[in-house]
Length: 511
Image (cartoon, rainbow, N blue to C red; front, side):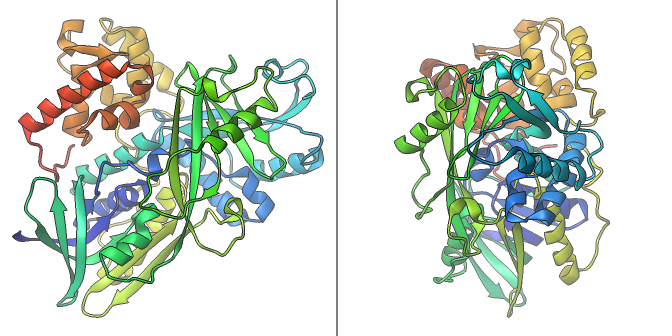
């Protein structure tokens, strides 16, 4: 067993909450180690509906504080990551048999005003008989309301949190499992296991359990608390189908069961439809969409769209388990989406922080709250900072993506314009790092299909902890949607050779 490494904070879990806490804490001057058993964002944090939003339907359950906090974060995050977050208009058709028009109008009035909206346009009514949004809908839908929220590349937001944390000194260890944690002279003694390495130990003053759906499992397996039951596991599933409409707005479809389903423009040629809310009893069972979930989503979309959506149209699907704080709600869709930061002082060990629930939208606030609690024990090292610091690649004006793209089209004229558009949206100003020294298409290396070249793979391996084809094709990019099985296999072989040859340490800290 290797010798100890000593940290102020060791974080279990490389999802949005764990990476957000690592970023905040490292920037305040704490020594931080983050351990993720698989890849960053390999669980819930890459399986969301990919929205930065206040949660309009949460108003029905009187979650006004949660909605207000999320709406404030919505514009703040957009300003900090304008390459991977963009504004999106939502069309909410009025269904005469469901929520009355006056209730929708009132809800949108509150939604417009409680979050300090400054950048996004307000809500308004739509006449679907004349607005282009009505062309894709059945003729019985004649009225709608339109409002603003934002779209986000969820997995990339996780990676950018980790990138920023590493750039400020945090050690980020993927494919590293935390096996055990025990009290030892006022600190935590923690056993780690990384693939192809001997077990090793680390010590920390604070242990943060940000395991997401596995938060109870961490309490059981790592800390030996056999009775842990603090989260409600709710599976959300999504389907991707060929593009259902030509415009760039999103639809919000209401259903008689009280739920809503989104139909969102996705990766230019597709429509993303989701999500479901179904209790998921066994965290050890990999979440997979069930046939009845596919049918449910198809039926909901088909109730509104002129062109029906069928299970045969589905080109891809994904499911993830949301770790909702168990507040005793009788139905999955009624369980709170709020977060809970629970702090314990463990005799002879130090501080234990358990993170329950939360949303992508409020991850920064959750992280700030968790680190505030930690400073109460370890003492203040540095000021709060994350509300004004751009994420890697996001250091340009909130409305400046077009100007950045135009500059890239001029500077890198040898790259296909469609590829440049994709790279600019994924990497922002980091595109200059990715393409540094490249003067011709040949300099990009082998082309694997769908616009993926050696140069991008090398960047993702060197700076974003990518090791497998799934890491590259379905988390850091979505190019797997456009690639054949043979092309995906070629990417896998390329990565296997690259990662093996380079033997990158699991605790590499890309900058």
